[in-house]
Image 1 (cartoon, one colour):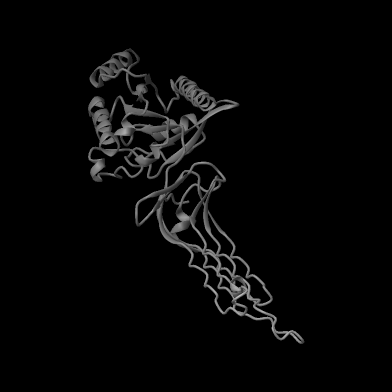
Image 2 (image 1 turned 90 degrees about the vertical axis):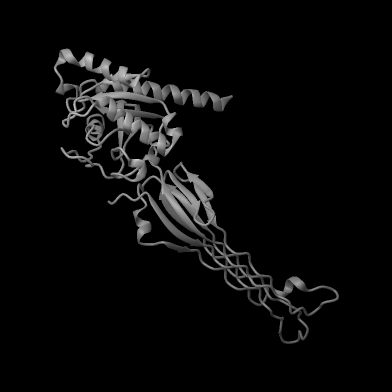
Length: 345
């Protein structure tokens, strides 16, 4: 299925039904009085987060969503039927913006969460509503109001605990294949990953976390080079970033300079992403002689002036990946317990 993470749609609530102008006319009751009923309310449009959907591709084919109108009132004080609400399913993690004002209307982060995006119109009043002691035969009614109409921009940000960051061919897809059941494409040319991939890493039967692999960045990505930075938004929900660096690039480039380029593009896109916890993962150590690994790791850390956690791994041989996943799981569990502790307070 094609991955689509942005789209625009048009939503409109149903119109309210008009009030009825009617008088009771029956045999032997010449002055029955007004009996026009109210109209029905128009249906509203809701967006609902659904775990069974992981892309916005369906909205490429249907962009207009209109709830049903309320029916008009009738005689004998019969009220018109209200229109049915329209519930539109979207992926969990969808952010909804008003296209005209760029206002963020809501963020659907939990399955089953609903967001009202277009309210239905209010019903019109029948002439029964206007009778009084001095107005015995009113001919006033009101029309139902129009339903709310909006143009919306839907933006999907995948929900993951950990995000992978790095240059093309740094080994991100190989890493996610090694530690999870996800099977992204792996090849010996850049940009084999064209859209985000999610994988569930299970370190124990009841302990797991979700990891997101996004297309690699290159220098100038903030200006649109390569695939640009359009997929970086998917890292905004992650709690931890793993910066994967190829310690032995085929083209002979300096790993330190390559890592600095990624950091620079990250800062250009969103400085807040740069403030997220970030661990350095030095990949492809199997390409180096065993006695040179420690020296290479120290040289890269010194060149980056790195003070955070650092791991030397070989994703393709699954060397060092288990320890890394165990430490990531421990970190995530600690963060979750702190969040739950703050909520209890």
